[in-house]
Amino acid sequence: MHVLQKVALVVVIIGALNWGLIGLFNFNLVSFIFDNISEVISRIIYVLVGVAGVISISCLFNRTI
Image (cartoon, rainbow, N blue to C red; front, side, top):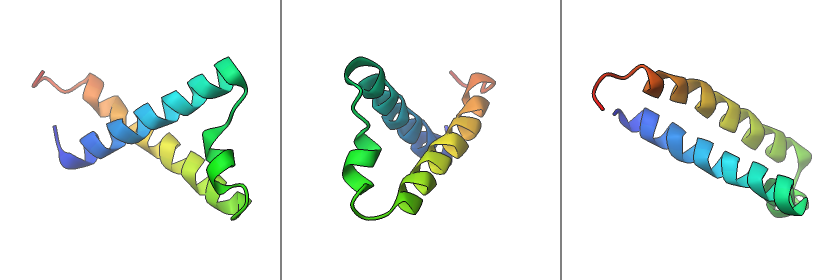
């Protein structure tokens, strides 16, 4: 697995944990951390998680498991 794929997978896992917190406790960790700084930074974080998800799709088709 390439370094970019590993980093993307970690970001996807963090994003999934954030969604779990939203679903279970209605607590958005990204908004909690970056709300006082800027809404733009929160949006960038969400975009990065989305891009990491797209990169992680390639892990499904990687034959070196």
